[in-house]
Image 1 (tube, one colour):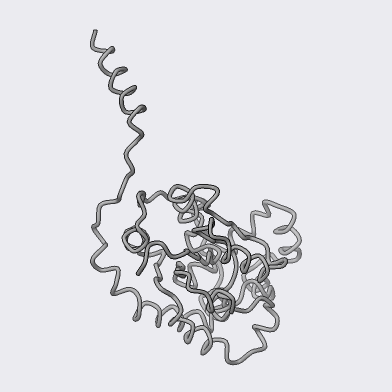
Image 2 (cartoon, one colour):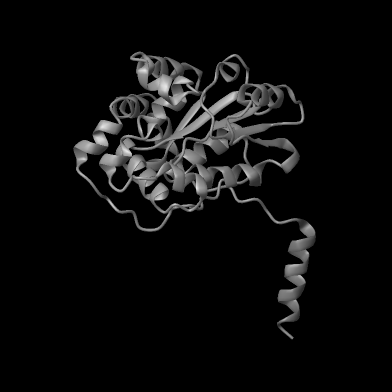
Length: 251
């Protein structure tokens, strides 16, 4: 795969994507990156970024839209065991850290209440089926088939449960200089609340989607499980300053 191709990273919420986003920021300059975390004018903004020769990396909370499918970009994403992802999503929203979360979680006090939010249901299938409108997504009985068919357009898939191997794999595929794994936005200790059946009801499509993804993409990670990370060397001037400082401390 050409390392000169433009990268599109589909950042599905609560899949360790924030940690990967920070890795992207260390491997691409600000001028080379386009972060898209709003759905307003999404297709227009994606089209613009895909056409911009200066942009090498596009990432954000957007689904696998037709404009991405039709492009020649390298498309990657991270997936996570669905029930663990849903619990993390629920705990994150429950903190009500901003006005958006407060409004979304109004009247939501239990996982059973959480199921009523369109954002809580089959989130990974929604992203990979390409839907922008979550209510339309919930009404389409073909979404799982569509998401599975879109596997063919994904150049690489990583898994939160195999995060270090996933980053090593992405790094080799894309020629990254930095693949040092750091964990961010973990949210502290997770509370596992509610009956398993409630979480399963939110992931009717995500559970089989995840299992199919493991079958298809996880074998590629096996050779990367113990791979040492790539860590970029500091600039020569900084290394010289550190050496002189260390030398002077001996006298």
